[in-house]
Amino acid sequence: MSRAAPAVAAALLVALVAAACLSALLAAERARPAVHGLAELSYFPNGKLVRLVSAGHSVAWADLAWFQTIQYYGKHRKSDQDFHMLRHLAAVIADLDPHFLGVYRFVGFSLGQEGHDFPAGMAVLQRAVADNPGRWEPWFDAGFLEFVGRHDYKRASYYLAHAAQLPGHPEYVDRLAGWVAGKAGYAETAEVFWTQILLTSENDYLREMARKYLDRLHRKGHL
Image (cartoon, rainbow, N blue to C red; front, side, top):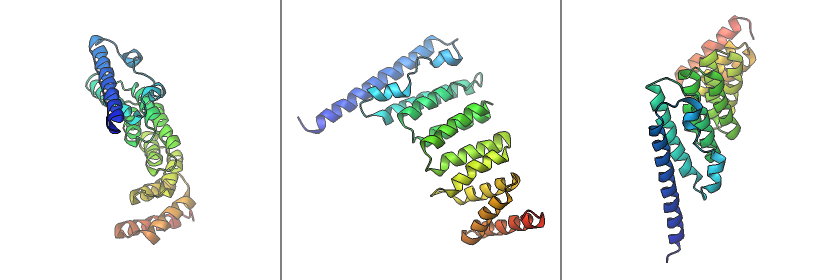
């Protein structure tokens, strides 16, 4: 027997178990068409429990849970627009793969915007920040949801300012962070953002925008 055989056998076993779980989940959903809300997915396990039995294949299980999340979202988008169990599913996936950033973003905005449950959406994005403090994406997502969901410029500025300080972020993060900071009344912070863009950006449009906002801050006497 080759050295790879045990690993292949383990992977096949995990795949078979995952397929059986998915089949059971879908069968349970088909058998209970009138059940909605919490009871509908109460049979979906906690991610930490799944991680214990996943034999090192937690990412594969996270993919399985992600598939179930999409199924749940699609079903309720066409029916009652009730997405509150997305938070539970996001928690399961986060327990399995805390760096699955696309899940946090999808669920956070689905709850906060489409589901009209801003606190639940923010809770998901705040977990994303806690699990990935060195990535700009979750900080930006949390700030953007504060900005578009509640127009809370002060809190949005807090998250966006962090995003703008982390490596790898695109220029639009600086632009939005500076604008929101100005709206929130943090003129000094806005000046830092816009000055940085003015001095470092290779984009002529962004530099011109930075000049415009800096001039506006000066004309209003904020600086």
